[in-house]
Image 1 (cartoon, one colour):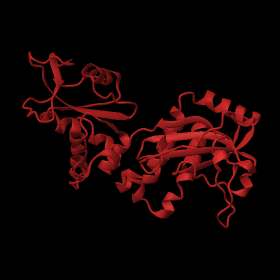
Image 2: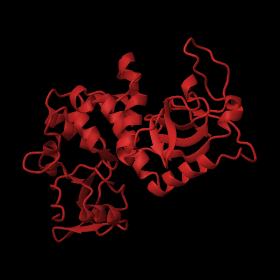
Image 3: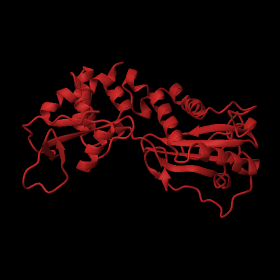
Length: 319
């Protein structure tokens, strides 16, 4: 089962026991696996493309349905461009890329399996890409646009989609892989209202880290909430959220090694690259048996959501 691009689940087509031989496809697959063995580069390019399309820092948008129809049509182009930039693929003779000397066309669809293939791509290799921001998942695979893999054209441009058999011929490089979460899509309506209640960017960022305690928050989410050019300033000390939330017992961990070690000691979500995790702390009591961390010469534990905190949070380790 994989996500259907709309946040739900859909049964995926069955793959045949064996796939048709295609030496060029094998060569391209080998190049891509060597260039990105764990999918981190593909995932980053897809994440950047979605963030560029939403342009949250300037618009405050964070959902696909907030885009204009004309903007949605550019999603495939942005993903094609950002994948090419990430891997520095040269342009192909007649298709988007040349990978290992082979022409490859990049096709994106928000609906898994619904890639539209034009007549000029017939018999060429395709890099098929699907991503869902709502489901935080993505796929990348390779398939040749053989006529026997394609359905009947249903539009005036002669574009076709892969048949059930054709979909079974996709060589998946990464399938249903995790995409960095857009936290704002996973908060409830009351939490979103609380975050966006103020017209001041700093107050919105403060509210974000109150609401999202214990969860990973990406820089792009901060930029979307702040809607300011200097959005990172809204997180830091010296007047940012780290200063403002200190008196509420909240610390904001970044992706620094010392901060990640604090998260590990407390057994909470660890901030990844370009991420933050906020957490409410209180001094450790004699009865506390769970994880704790030493900060400012004192042991601290994670406070429960309903605890009233009276002591400011400690200083984090220097980075």
